[in-house]
Amino acid sequence: MKIDFEHIQSAHCENGVTTNLLRHYGVSNLTEPLVFGIGSGLFFIYIPFIKVSNGPAFSFRTMPGNIFNRTCKSLGIPVYRKKFRSKEKAEQFLNQKLEENQPVGCQVGVYYLTYFPKEYRFHFNAHNLIIYGRENGEYLVSDPVMEDVTKLTAYELQRVRFAKGALAPRGQIYFPKIVGEVSPEQIKKAIVTGVKRNIRDMLHIPGPIAGVKGIRYTAKKIKKWRDKLGQKEAGLYLAQLVRMQEEIGTGGGGFRFIYAAFLQEARQYVANDELLKISDEFTRAGDLWRNAAVQAAGIYKGRIGTQKDFNDMGDFLLEIAEVEKGAFEALAKLDWK
Amino acid sequence: MKKKDIPQDPSVLDNFTKEVSYAVDENGKYTTALSRGWEVKASALSVSWEYIKERVENARQQVVSGQASPILFFLELRIMDLATLAAYTGYWKWTIKRHMKPNIFEKLPEKRLKKYAEVFEVEIEDIRDFKNRTERIEALVAELKESIK
Image (tube, rainbow over all chains, first blue to last red; front, side, top):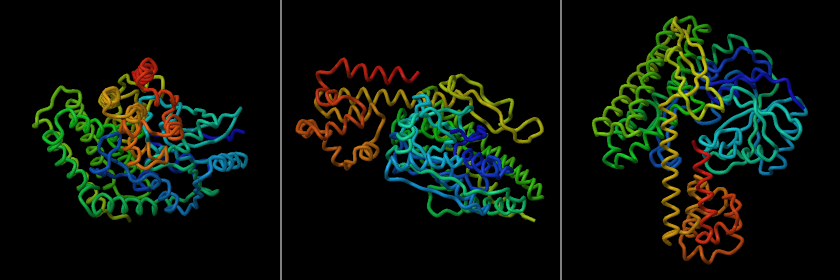
């Protein structure tokens, strides 16, 4: 049972699942940058009191599920989403969908994901992939971060669908209800909604830990880490920051480049060249994040590590905060024609 | 990032996949290209794994010296935290903390040990008889180290 499914690699899993599933279900004019922007994917949050892998919790994108949900909602596409208590029912439902020629998105945990290298198999439960068939007892997997399709046995798939811990998938599958093309007008509207929501998330979220304020907050914390934690653990915290920013599935520069690409694509739907200028600002932000990562690497590799080096690291983030603030403020002033 | 600057550094991604990167071409227009890897993040990952190996070794010492029960060791070996282990076992975090005390651990019924063995994917004797299973424990640690380049 093998559906004729087009596997296209993307920089980020949720973007890839959204684009590839929607393409299969008839929406051919969406791209990864478009869904990322329509889904208001760009974000930043530092949650100091939660630990992930014994380190601080950072995210450079919006909450898992938002990109897919928001994109479908903005385009008027109904979504079917189901979680399961029973592993058997979860498998039966999947098999039924495949019989009906419907590939589906699955949320999975990567700790038991056998085709990942061990170095990437942490207890992280917000990965997304598509199942598009079953052959000889193995499920056919289109994982958007991979160049090629892969396979999982029924047991292997069950383990990742039912991984436990934070953000546990609980067998979750999701797919759009059959759709046709969406019009450029619909895409334009979705772009505007997406941008406005992203402005809200980055500039107007209350509290100090999220959005642009969160970047500044993190900058200040970084400057105190060396005193508070000692050089070694402070270095580990920086390694965690870099991993969250750059690790597989983020497109580098913590999604900033994908957002910059989105604004360039948006120009095709909204006739305002300001979009291109603001896109450049996000490219600049992405480059600054990468420079900050290089600075962090110097510290966690032990080559540098004085208080000044940590201050420089913090200063990178302060500069990034200014650039992203300016970019979103410019978007807020944009005439959407 | 410019397309020509997309890093092509060796890393554990070799033999796994190349990654899609977004970068600008000579005309400043966004395009995608594949990246083999970036040294900066490869080292972030490697530093994180070095730390994990240290935690596993520290945990082993604590068990051997009687400061903690084998539950601590296996938690670290399987790179879990209390919340994750609680989720997999169905036990409360404070219950697991108690099980990490040697005197409490000694009295654990078979049922509990079996559950831990299942979750940690080891034999029940590895947990129950930790101090006498040195070779087996060493093999498990070696397995972890082997699997990370």
